[in-house]
Image (cartoon, rainbow, N blue to C red; front, top):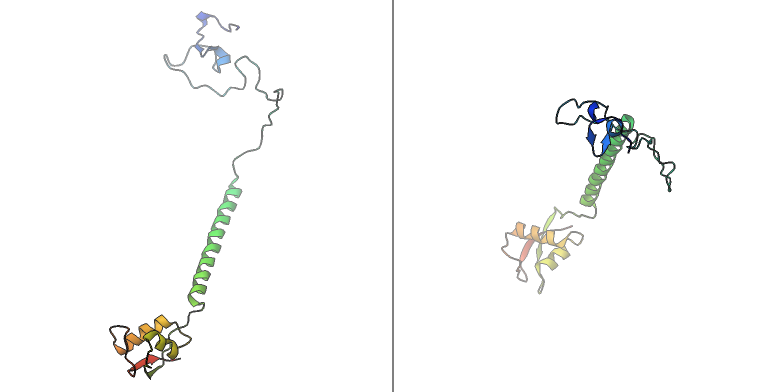
Length: 163
């Protein structure tokens, strides 16, 4: 190793490097006992410039800026908000379709019907309102007649929704 400065010239040694090779100007340290901030090195410690062109496997370095421009950031934010909006509209449309698809309301028109022998309340509901959901019609029959259970007697007259 070549000595760049003599020991009396205020040369400081750090990690085996001296003076300009260590990335610092030659001279006394600005603060005794502490190291000054080093500028970014453009040369290797041996004085050879940084270069990857003559490496065994050449390394291609990008010279392009890797930070997005403000326009790119705005475009990305806009695309994200548009995606959120489209997904929200799709979710609302799906919920509306689920709510209205294939749901048949219990008829509001009522009639008095007699229970046939061996007939259950669910069979009576299916006979009185064949297009409506049987469980909903049974609940409506129980409410209309003040029943406490699903047991019915043959010949009993019940108010049922018909449709």
